[in-house]
Length: 390
Image 1 (cartoon, rainbow, N blue to C red):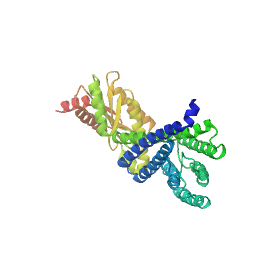
Image 2 (image 1 turned 90 degrees about the vertical axis):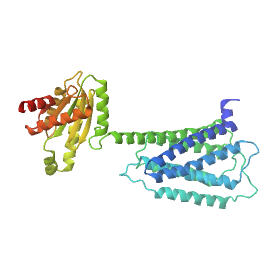
Image 3 (image 1 turned 135 degrees about the vertical axis):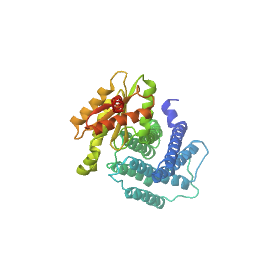
Image 4 (image 1 turned 120 degrees about the horizontal axis):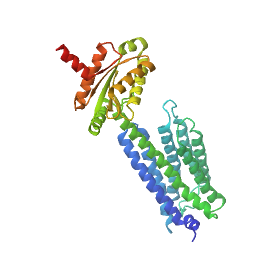
């Protein structure tokens, strides 16, 4: 027996349905986790509703593989209807997940497609009444009106993807599903199961389709997890580490380096900038300054937002002098933005505790602020001046 013969027989259908069921169970598990973890519960509830219907249809196909098994045609018709409706729901969900908020996805076309599925099913029963004595053996029963309407639904969904920012995997999944249905209909209505390769194709393509959907959902889960993680460690406006995570990064750097410095920066006259140019302009300037500090800290440390217009940097001073980094930040801010900054820094020579180093760098920054602004002051200089005054 050749591979084509094996795939086109009952074993091929068993392989296809079993693989699809496993993939769908994994998708269902992820959908439940998303439903529990995130706020957009209505979308995930739709997905949780649709997936079991497809699993049920695949289970029916598995049952029909075994000789002697038969099903009520009404049951088979019901799940054929549910498969089309599930396809509509699943594609609405994926399009909703990946559609930009500015391009609101309209639900009405999907509702109409769902209602039309029931209308076409009614027409199918009216044109070809199902007798109580008939039964479905090995999936030989056909519903032409529903089958060809299913193709129309796929084409309509493909046309409705223009407003969504969807990945190539999604478009590929639609093409694969369309090819799968086309192969199935050609096999049933044109070639009457005479082409083995066409039977094999119609049974294998659903695996590819649901695998692509699984990858899309998996990518969405990963994106949500990454977004949640980024939100927990990043400041939303500047993109720098928030205060809590900055402390953590500074502690790691202090433990891994022989010497370290904390650089404390405060934008000069920031309140005046807010009052005269507005919050939007001020926020833009804050982002510019934050980007400069991030660039100057790259490779040698990390940058964070302490609060308001106060920004921090922790750098390893093993290979570079902290005063050089601090002065580079001050100079670039003066040259590249419309503001200046007052800067202070402290090193691990003055303290071995991150919290204390930040306090010392803050004191040094305050000295810069009160003695002319737009300058860099090391903490040891402020300590010396205090001793002199004493």
